[in-house]
Length: 215
Image (tube, rainbow, N blue to C red; front, side):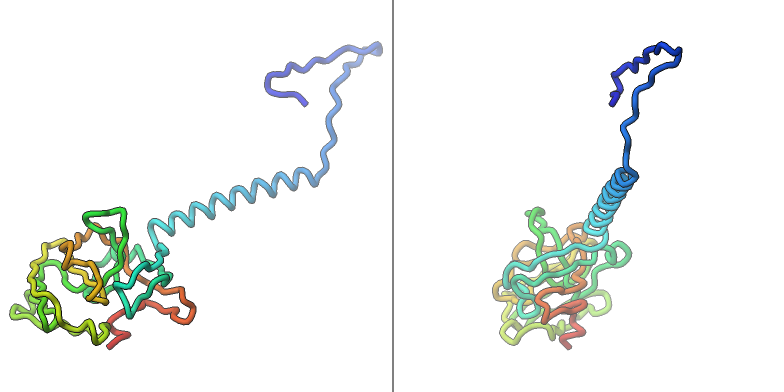
C-alpha cells in the first residue's frame, strides 16, 4: 500500500497497455467496522463532554465525611449538589450548602445557612437570634432539624454580616467547625445547594435536611 511519501510507478507492457498496481480487496464488513469505531469514538467524546459539563456547571456528587451534620447527614452519605439554582437566586436560611472553606479553598465542606447578608447573628445559651431590617429587635431562630443535645448552649458571640456574607453552622453544634470558628462565608465560595441524597438507599431523599421536613 502506498504512503504519502511513495511515488507510484507504472511500467509499459509488450502489448502497449499500462500495468497498474493491483488493489487490495476489502470486505464491506471492514468499512462497516471502521464506521462503527468512528461512531463509538464520537459518542464517547460527546458523552465525556456532557458529563464534564454537568459535573462542573449543573450538578456534582459529594460524599459526606465526618459527623458535623448529624443527625441529618452521616458519614458516607452520597449527595448530589445543584450548581445552577444559585446562579439565578440567593441562598436561603436553612439551605444545606456545599462550599469551599475560605482560608483553605482546596477543602469542600457542607453546612446549613443560618445568617443572611446584612444580618446580625447572636449566639448564646438559648440558641441563635437573628436581627435584620424586618426584625430590628431580633427573633429566636426556630431549628426543628437539631437534635435535643444541640439546642442552645452556644458560646456567646455576635457577628454582623457584610452584603456578600453568610453565617453557616453544622447541625451537630458540639463537634462542628463552622462560622463560629473561621468567620463568615463569602458568597463566592458557595458551590451549590444539596439537592439529593442517593446513598444509603434506605435514605434516598430530595432536599435532605430541609427545615420543612423537620418541622
